[in-house]
Image 1 (cartoon, helix red, strand yellow):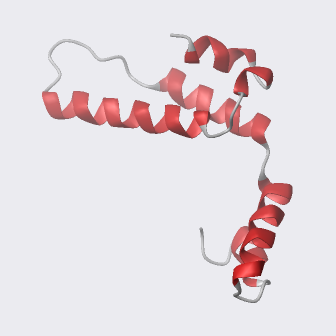
Image 2: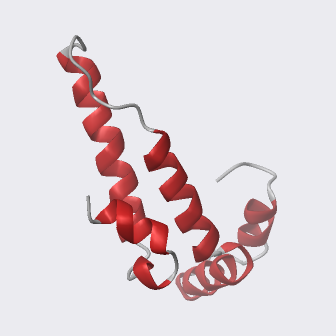
Length: 94
C-alpha cells in the first residue's frame, strides 16, 4: 500500500484489532474494488506483453513466463471474470 494514499488513510482509521481486519478489507473492497476496471487492466497488460521470439535468452523467457503467470493468477483471483468482460474470456481461452 502506498503511504499517505487514500487506501492507507482508510486502513489507518481502524484501530488495530483482529476484528477490524475484516472490516478494513471490506471497506477497501467497497471503495476501491472495481472488478470491471481490474479486468480491463489485466486484459490490457496481457495484450501488451511482448511475444516470445527466437533469439531471446533464457532469462528473458523465464521473466516473460513469470510475468504472464502473475497476471493470469491476478485475473483468476477475481473469480468468474467471463461475466464481467468478454475480452478477458478470449485471452483466458488462449
